[in-house]
Structure formats: C-alpha cells, structure tokens
Amino acid sequence: MADQQAQDPIFQIQRVYLKDLSLEQPNSPAILLEQEQPTVDIQLGVDAQPVAEGIFEITVSATVQTKIQDKTVFLVEAKQAGIFEIRNLPEDQMGAILGIACPQIVYPYLRGNVADVIQRGGFPPVHLAEINFQAMYEQQQAQAAGQPSSIVTQ
Image (cartoon, rainbow, N blue to C red; front, side, top):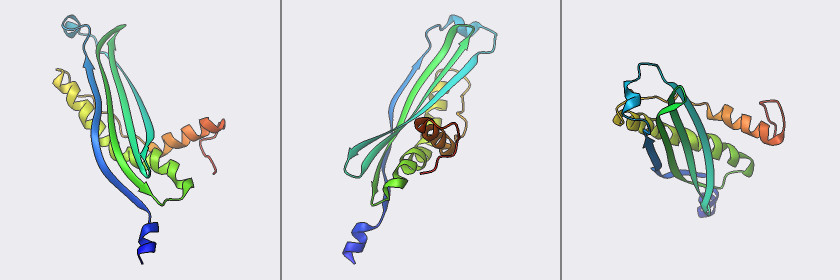
C-alpha cells in the first residue's frame, strides 16, 4: 500500500508570492495634466524553472506601459511566482502542467497586484484580461516546432 502511495501523482501549491514589482512615472507631474487618452501596451510571459527534485517555480510576468504620444505615463513591471510540487506525472504531461495549469493558478494574483499598484500610483486600475494559457502554450509549442499550425501532436 505504501508503495502505491509513493507512485501516486502529486500536484501541490507550496506558495504563491510576488517576486518583483515596479512602478515608474518618469514624466510626472507634467504628463498628468495631459487631456489626451494614453495608449496601453501589455506584454505577458511565463517561465518555469526546476528548483529541486519535483519542485518547480512558475513565474508569470506582465509589463504594462501607457504612453501619450511617445512619452511614458507609467510603466509597471510585475512578476508573480508560485512554487509547485509536481511528482509522478507522465513526462508528456509535464509541459502542459508547467505551461498551462500552474500559470492559471498564479495569474489571478498577478492581475490583482498590477491593478492595485496602478491604482496606488494615482491612475484608474488597468485590469489585465483573462488569458487562455492553453492557447498560449499551444502557440508556443507550434512556434518551437516550426509549425504554422496551432495544434501540435506529441
């Protein structure tokens, strides 16, 4: 019985934490007096790193930059991370777990922290859109394989 439990799949969240957060307003206060609507550019990224045997750190990062013409109103860079214990899973499932399941858990914390820091900076909060991490993962896999298709067969 103990041998069976040793082979059971394990997927546990050890911790979710804010790894890095910065807010810059390089052109304040003058730019705050501008009446023009700023443009918003949002970049997202996912990174997975092994920490120890069966332990992985998943980091979801966001860069939010708003500009009026070519001047930055504010720039937010944030990294939200989670430590996950993942053991006894088939190797062919690990990529999807690390690239889809883990980021889906970490991302809502990132969204909240980004909206909060922008609001604390004196701006209306920018709410990052919901992300389909499965589609994002499949697109990355297709690009890595050099396939134009968004469907990748293993």
